Length: 139
Image 1 (tube, rainbow, N blue to C red):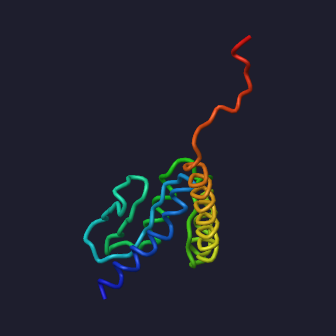
Image 2 (tube, one colour; image 1 turned 135 degrees about the vertical axis):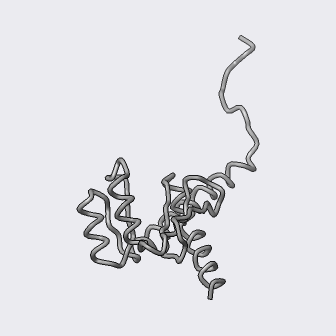
Image 3 (tube, rainbow, N blue to C red; image 1 turned 90 degrees about the vertical axis):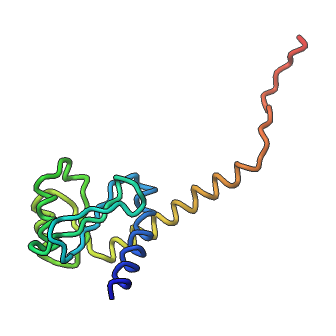
């Protein structure tokens, strides 16, 4: 079972990474855990993409609520949860509350934008630079 949880976390991180790349946002994914203290991991070795593991004495929802109280620029924060109470607490703290389907839609949109960016970069990479300025240097 722990391997399945680990694989599920990695899969979620890979999906959300497109949002991180395209939107240039700080991602914090909070999980319930049996740890004694709060733990933070950086799955892509990037301080702007975090896994936060709640201590066994507090749920992931509780950690999210504490983050919302302490964070600056709440209008730039989006919380994804299927829990009505978490979404209500999110909105009452001035942040955006999203359902999981909203996250999947955001991921799809970000993936499309990444593909467009890659196509633009790929199509311009193989073209040699050329001077197309018409200047008569002999005069």
